Image (cartoon, rainbow, N blue to C red; front, side, top):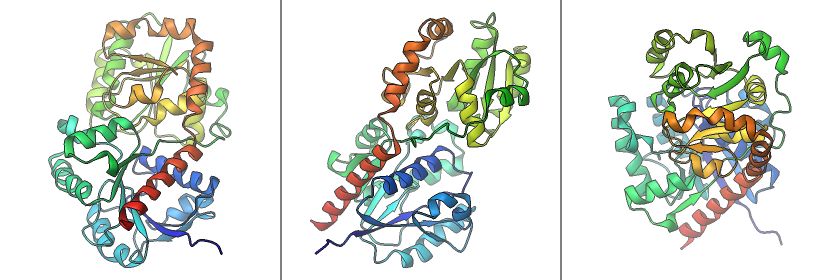
Length: 376
């Protein structure tokens, strides 16, 4: 007689396609991984209207139930979580809330994913409204969750220390990349022509211009320590809170000829830009995981990263991990050129530890931990 598979409901109403950054890819890759490892659960994803068309390949392999709304309003999403979702999931064995909070209504058997707790380290980077929301909702969600999952040990330990949660109630679910990453990347010659890169050596930072991403640090390097380098810095990503400062600084430092702004790009262009770059440069002050450094390692591009938050844990020995000082970064491009083949090899080997299948295996362990806790 076959054993009944447990029913896992995954709350992704927060995941408005194209609007939530790296957390969307984190979850999509995990879900693909669950299919790949044939996870022993009945998985149902509850998502905003339009999710299935945005992720048609996933929707063909995982049961997706769409909400009666696109959930672009936080207030409406919270309302639906406490009404429509609570009704839809009342018979689930556990509900996995992927957006960092837990609605006030619904079953109490929950796995909660918290991607980061940046607001504890850098509250000044949040609006007063968002900060008030996080300070109210996150501690409550952690207190009520059966198990809390995080993408890195750094976030796990931050939560345990700040909120006093025991190790028995936490679980790390690493980020994972699909094996085919880069298979459809845009050819280099097309990208060089489209973004007017010519034959220049390219440095890439794929990040929205929020203050903690620290684009300003790179601009200062271009103007001073790297002023004699024949490089162009390609900035991929949307406009964040630091955008006005970044725009003015580029002009003020006289480096407009060294900076290329691509805006947000599709995945094929992103992968192509990473692959053609001499290095991915990532001086972020805070990352709950830092997927771009992993993507670069997997695509054979050397990484120069800050030593902040989770980044040393993710990069390991697969790239240069440096303190955020101009002195430490001044000679980094020379090191990249001198040790390129070694760094590429180490990066590729490091990336093997972060596949979508291994991410899914971590998630299976978190689900089993949650089920064991609620059965006691």
